[in-house]
Image (cartoon, rainbow, N blue to C red; front, side, top):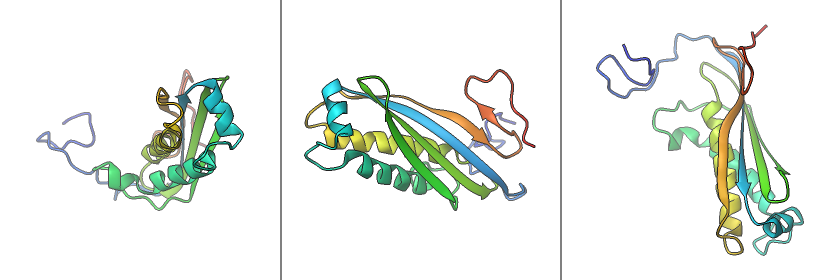
Length: 165
């Protein structure tokens, strides 16, 4: 048997059967950065971009991305998300930090939804600002934390898994 759960005994792609799992509260937090010219970041934070409020549009896009995750990633389960939030903050003078949190009570985790929210939010910022800064770079999109399910809590950089109570 493969150690990858999305492969069956014959090595073919399949959707994992989660019907035998008990629904639990699950939470995931993902993060990423968009590096850019310092003037571009100042313009975004000051609300001065010609296309409008970049962060408001990117927040909505990130939420939409999380909600449509199963439409984008072929073997991802569609989930009834209870919460999706997307936050932005300056990370130095030349980067925008993006963080997304997703929650669900379900049989599988929401890591992919959180990662998709960050990615779509970053792409939206890029799209709205590319006319003034084509050199922007999306970087370090990664899972920061996940909670719930059989594997419990995982935190990036932690030395040992935390136990769920």
